[in-house]
Structures are given as structure tokens and as C-alpha cells.
Length: 254
Image 1 (cartoon, rainbow, N blue to C red):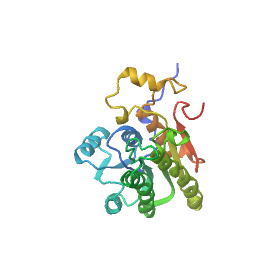
Image 2 (image 1 turned 90 degrees about the vertical axis):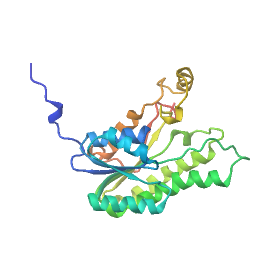
Image 3 (image 1 turned 30 degrees about the horizontal axis):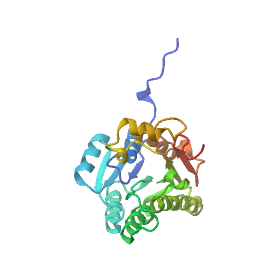
Image 4 (image 1 turned 90 degrees about the horizontal axis):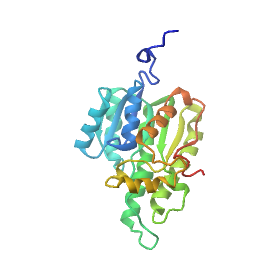
């Protein structure tokens, strides 16, 4: 019987790469940061709360640099870019994941404050995160945006959130075309209902209720998203750009 290769000897997919993951203190972004780090990347992670940021960095391991930053704050994004420039001088992978849900705002009850906060983080923050870090990106880099399968469905009360996530799909198409001459790939991850902080305090019975609308019969796990981000970040996806990768158990497909 032939001897199996030791998986520890396999070359990491992202050896010597530098990644930035925003909003990575929990959930999908934290799982993605772990996946990138496990495959050899040094990962810069951001979050608004110092305590949660340090806890996330400890979970990821030694190949991480935490940077306290709010993606809706352009000065904070400048500090992030300067930290990366001084630390490694480049960005090979950006997962712009920081987002804000903000609860439901049905038409007739939408406030200016809710609009500004949701679009300020999800749209404005994502755009300026990518733009601020773009000068540090070399040819062949990968940009991954964090969308939502909810933007494909007419969910009452979620018009602001859904529209903000739909904008990211448009960004991915346009930026993919603009950056193609440099070989920079731009894609958007589209998660379905995923068992993150959004379901904190929800009973298992209630979670099973949510799972009934998903063809695969379960909520997504943060690690499902992390694996998809790793794929798009790596050379395995070298011919994938401008696309939306649905990681939703069929929620928006069937």
C-alpha cells in the first residue's frame, strides 16, 4: 500500500501572501481570516472594538496583525493602509467583509440615520476600503466583497440592507473590468442565512425553522464562507473574476 503524503508537508495555497480582512472579529470574516492564515497568509484584521479584535487575533494565531478601525471612517482606513504599508508593503488579498444590518426598516419607517449608517458602512465603506488599499495591490491580487443572498429576494423590511448588498454585486462587475489589465480579480461572496451573531439568542428550534427555507436543510456555518473566500483568494480561482459565488445552500437558487 503506498504511503500517503503528510498533509503538513503540502505547500500552503497562500504562502508569503498578505491579506486584509475587514470586520473580522467574529462570524464569517473571522472564519475567512483563519482559513487564509492557515494557508500561509499574514492577515491584517480590523474591528471596531479593541477587546473583540484582540480575542479574534488570538484565535487566528501568530500570522495576524489586528488594526482597530471602523470601515465607515475614512481616516481609519488611511491608518489601516499605513499599517499594512509599514508592515509588509503590499496587499495580495482583500476580503472587504465589514458590514452593518441595522434591523428592519419597512418603507414608510425608513430614517435618514438608518440609511446613512447602512450605506455608509456597506457601500461607502467597502468602496473606500478597496480604493484606499488599491495602491498597495500588485498585479494578480484578489479582491473579494461580502454580499448577501437576501439581495436576490424581496424580504419585507430589508430594503436598505438588500440594496446596499446589491450595490456590491455591481461593484464587483465594474471593478473586475477596470482592474483586469492588471490581472486583479474582483468577486463577491453571496452567503445565505448563516449561523453567526445574527442568530445569537435564537433557539435551536427556531434555527431549524429558518433552515426549512434552505434546500440543503441547514443554516450555513462561518467555515463554509471561509472556504469559499480561500478559494477566490488563491490561484485555484485564477480564471474567476466579476462573479458572484453563492454559498447559500440553494436559498436564492431553488
